Length: 116
Image 1 (cartoon, rainbow, N blue to C red):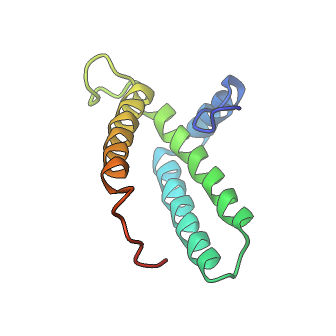
Image 2: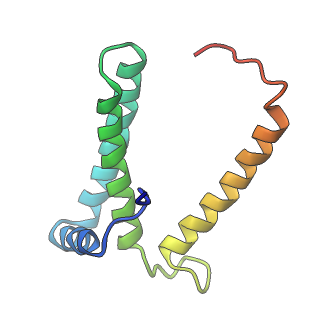
């Protein structure tokens, strides 16, 4: 199965060209817009107004703009020494997944859902 968090080398080239063509501000505005559209799609899905495919389409858009943000800041000098944007994000994901795993292990037998 292909890892959905990564784009292909050719797709990365397209994302880098888009970054050069349009301003950094525009790219960040698009990221905000796509995140907002995902929020709306989830709300509409929960109310039965759209199918899950609409939510997943917005997930794809958000993943694309997130990848573009990482590529745009690949070698940002504010990142910890020795890390590029991708390794920084992967380290954060590992930390957050470890925390989630701990919560799941703690709560899997005692959690009582409050409703959706």
